[in-house]
Length: 225
Image (tube, rainbow, N blue to C red; front, side):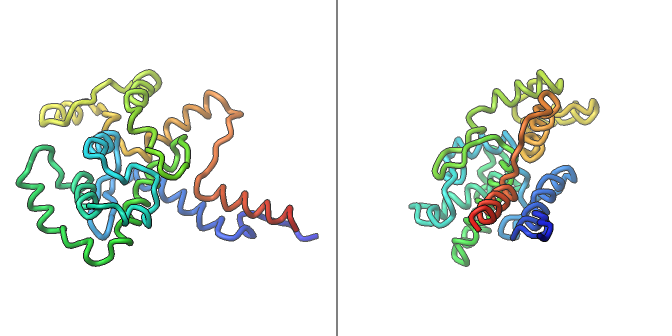
């Protein structure tokens, strides 16, 4: 009987695992991401709070094919791209108008593809979050920001500092090396939470959202044969 190796024989497993490794590694390089070819800052607790304030439908777990049918989805898309853009400045209406004028025609090209890229960007940001996967549910962590900040304050010694960035705050952080968890990419936040949980409970079982479903389906197929 041939030896079965899931990393080689399971269809799509190797590619999914490679993508998981890439998603987890890139945020530590401090690089911007890309959505529709536009630079995008990594999703953070602060960005999620802004998106929740404007009731962005992209914080739900709806697929792109459902979102594209939503009324005013073009406005939702441009607002999402504005909030995560490097140019985003709260309250700067002039900068916002310039951004909207420059990119408002994006949806005219391939609306479904744009929505897919935004959904993928959000899903990858929550890759290691312990949340439900029910379609249409709101992302659980944007309404539990305080608990995440409290966790990092208690277990990683990060100060509780959730206010908007300012010149003096940023200068102080640069001099002292102080981090603000509110501005740490969620891809890093959830990995650090996982590390802490695993260290506290080595027997804890963690699942990978991209590769595990492929492995589970493959094993079910083997058992049915």
